[in-house]
Picture 1 (cartoon, rainbow, N blue to C red):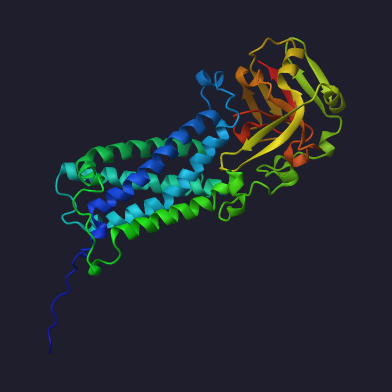
Picture 2 (picture 1 turned 60 degrees about the horizontal axis):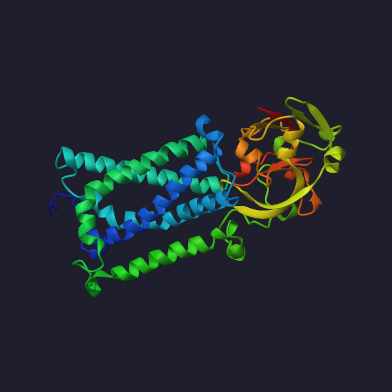
Length: 381
């Protein structure tokens, strides 16, 4: 009878040089740049969308395209980071099989920090991508959790760079040791790998950035939104049906303005006031944006008619029955800006119900969620 030797489990061996520190550094610096842009633009976006009390009154209304540019960069850099993160993980995953797994307390802390970094990065990119499609298969509120984990990711990344700085420094320059061509047995060389990664980044960027960079709209193949799709050639996030606003419910609608001199106006009376036309973008947190021509009454004229001084803040209340953005506050910087309108028309046509008929707010440098639709009341604060 033949006795078989006992089966011994050995960790896999990785000899290819594409898993070395230089390749990891080359991919890592591209990933780090994408995450840095995504983090900075994300912080700006958050404070424009949910400003603390000390900041709310001093948010700038110019440049009018500021939020559009910021959010476009935020989503584009986040999408570009996806193939970069996958490539980075591919270059370093053999380290999971290093034995012993923990050599010292310092090594244990280093591996823990890397685990936090990887988990936070995967969480941010996954939830961010699902947010662009407005799909939320989780029980928590997306915005505060996404913002909190962004700081966790930033801290873990800074710590990781500090720990790995000697290796990063040694492998940063293109002329550092290890740049020779790889042997044929090692498979594709480093340059081919990096070329493929950059090509993947370019492909996902070109096929999604058209949702905000409208000249590239024809290439917008993978983004969940196209800037020309929607009523009056403008996308809609929240429909009138979702907000439970209907035409019968608007019968007898009047705009109420409260202040030192309270008054109310019918739609015909609003339309009889001096009308102004501006070209402003709608820019949403999901990354899409589109410029349009809006016609209506300047908010500063409504405030002046209510007897309020310049620089007065406002509270705008929508007719929708419920929703996180049913009530919006606007600082004096927006109120005084002549581009801020209570819009009645879009691209020369009366607003459709989904776009906020009978009246909606349109203001420069504001997230789309704060361009309140179905306005019923304006309160001078």
